[in-house]
Image 1: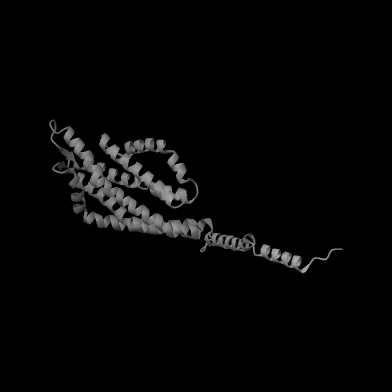
Image 2: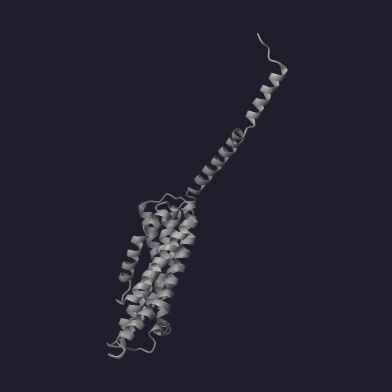
Length: 281
């Protein structure tokens, strides 16, 4: 029987030590620890920190309470805007330029004032309405979902206001200039104040709603429903949808206003794709 020499024994021992400290053996515990910490973090983010057992009746009661508070806020804002409606009306008349407005029926301006105060009051009360919505849905959201709540509300408010401003400085003047120039040599420009404000308010608020497209894209991307590549791959349908949306949301029939709104929708959509891409989705 051959007895291994001391040299062979030492070589085998060194080989065993090298195997013990090999990169694979040293990385495996680190990777396992990282994976475990990641799992713990995911479990922490998926928890419901304020989970409370509530019956259907309790949910309906809370919903009624939130709606009541929101309606009170809207009513207060509308009443306040009604008493200061003249400056708002004068501001909305600016895009019309030298056009004169007529009251074609008794009380027409009064009802226009109520309509303008209603839209303005709803706009002023919208932060409080969003706050009540957040209080209602917050207990059912995980920590991960709560991280989206603030950016979504602030981003939605900013984009809606951006839509109002875009309609005021770009869409409304373009549409009015088209109509004025089209009939400049044929008719005198005397407009019904009721028809004018219906046109202006509808165009402004529909544009504000159209500016919510990036928010929807970010939500779909973060929730893993649609990726940025999928959004980009359907660009042909998006172009068609932007044209249809511009035609539907624009109360006028002139091609310039529809093209401006459709172009803005396209820009917002591709901007939303970029945001989803930056978020790694």
